[in-house]
Length: 325
Image: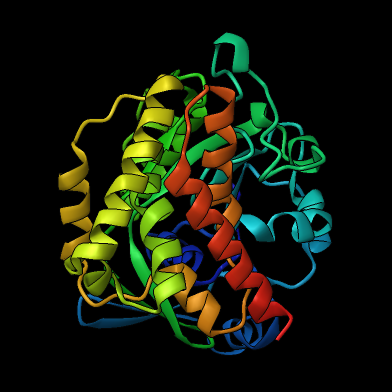
């Protein structure tokens, strides 16, 4: 039996764990606090498509009780990885596949990238190399997360839309480990295509997040208002075009144009971006993986990002001001 552990079993991790359990594939989730207590006592409740299902994944508070896994699925926010290093260590063996289901530019981005930037550390997301050391890029399988879900109360996940977890090797190969996980997720009723150019798809999602998230956090506006207002629409579009130039210098190919990507964001409607939600809830903001890393990489490839640098400075100050009252 393939061992799978979901670390960060909040909305997205909980959705994946519940789906796998429902399909008869045992999963371990690492969770603490009220959410972890609810999972242990009442099970993991998934509300999706008008149905409510109670699942019973194994719940662990101490990863040392679990041991190395075949697949370790990380569904944390990017800035939560470093504080979690000590907890993650017992779950990782030499043959563990680390599934990085994390938004933004990941620590492994330059692994097998090729060219002069191959293996270069991204200071914004891995300032001292601790992530690269603890989570070896050679063991990483990239994943782009598309579903939307929320923890509506401890132990209860509400799934609103989407069922795709795209997978891809950093070197573009069609590996056995990717094919196996894809098969398991498909059996669980999820879409899990394996793509040869995972960074292309990573950028399509990042493209919107790098603009919509910080602008919504700065303005307090929901996604529909950010996009329908001519002023903030123009700021987001300009920022996204800067990002596109950086990505293309890094070898990325965009399958759609910027206006189609913005239109896709508009379809989501009156949605509070994750960064705005975190700001309102007093949580750390996912600034560096979504925008800081893009601005850093722009300097690598000689692209000026005046809008990006301005928005980054403003949202960093917004976070610092909130933090220090």
